[in-house]
Amino acid sequence: MERKIDKKMFRSVIIYGIGQYYKTIKSELFAQIKPDYLCDRKWDTDAPESFDGIPVISRENLYKLENSLVIISGGAPWTNESIRSDMAHIPGATVVHADEIIGRQVNITGKMLKKMENKGYYEDFWGNRVEFDSTVPDTVSIIFRGRDNRMVIGSHVTAGSLTVGFGNGGVCVIGDRAEIMEAYIAVSGAKVMIGKDSLISTMVQIRNHDGHHMFDLETKKRINHPADVIIGDHVWIGYRAIILAGARIGAGSVIGAGAVTSGQFGGNLVIAGCPARVIRTGVCWSRDDTDYFNHESLDACMPQEAEMKAFLFDEFPPIC
Image (cartoon, one colour):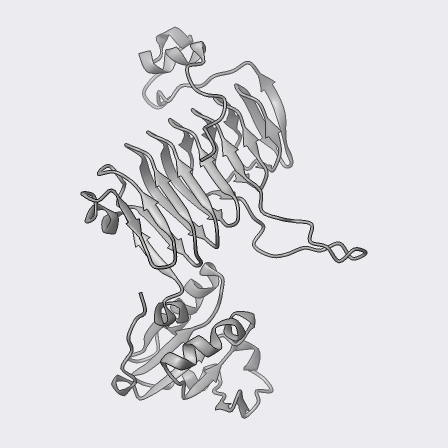
């Protein structure tokens, strides 16, 4: 998955972002292409003349270069997008991420998967695998930044915007008929299981790890390991909810807008707040849209929704 770059196509090659991630991938990157300059916003003032034996260029002077190749070596996806936007006004610049050159990051979209639908799965050299069928939505974006990950997308899943970012050794399963408006799922070292027939609103985050390490000062031991997130069948997750490592949400429950939780809850509950707590028990919900329907009883809902009172779904999806 390495992206071959012909340095002769550019007047200059710049690596942007000289932090911890740069130190991690430097040897692999330099084996592919040698930069002419290094640049980082921390050097906007008091910049050294060189770093690692390579000349340092300020951002002000970087913006004046023409026909240059800018290689981003940042680790966080949102930071990288900000840098890409920042570099967009450089005349004739080509902006890529270092992972695209060394083959460390692999981006897979629903459209790409559909071209493999006869096969029903995607696999790469690094042990990452995606399982899907012909109903996979075009709007799925899967980012593999590491190895030995597994993604399973159920049948007839719909998504306005779904991004799943993997580190190493993660598993993410999205059940049949799940409907996702807009969500980011971060998976590494543990599982994220989303049950069938779930409804996920906009700007929702589901994370089975914190993204950074935390340690106890006295013991110096890590205190925030990845942990499975298990979301049962027919769970409705509201606007801007954040589901964190260790959370378990039982079937038929509702997570309120803006709720933040890593807690464990049973089924048919309304859970809201920060930190989230149970505010009502013994409920079920209907997918019928209140813009068009005004039902006063469960029996008036669509037949498949009315059946929810019979608790036809599993409390939690099976952990694969």
